[in-house]
Length: 122
Image 1 (cartoon, rainbow, N blue to C red):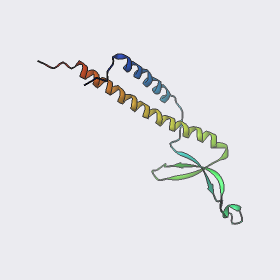
Image 2: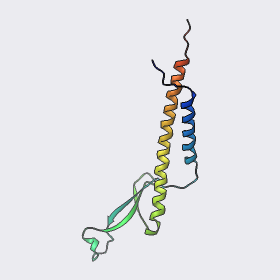
Image 3: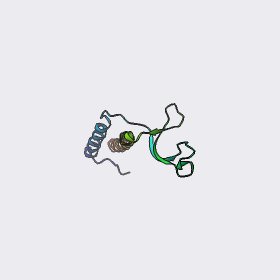
Image 4: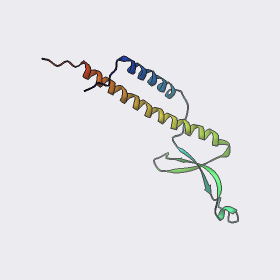
């Protein structure tokens, strides 16, 4: 069986990639584990145009503070900040997935090294 291990270079490359991903994860920033959506909502005034469809366009943050879904209207002044924090969370999760992929690749390389170095007793 051909070994996937090609020497120390691939593992060193993975270590550098892993360090770069970790550096990005360790930057202290707050994020929101929620999703931001632009939706049509009605205001409840019987004479408003929104009583007939479509409603007012508002930004809504979907959250699960106690495990149950909640929707919270975001003030126009806060939309960009909220969007940034939601995006930072998505980037954090993507970095975690990248770390898992790097760990998997490194394990495969080390398993190949184990097979290559295995010398059966004769």
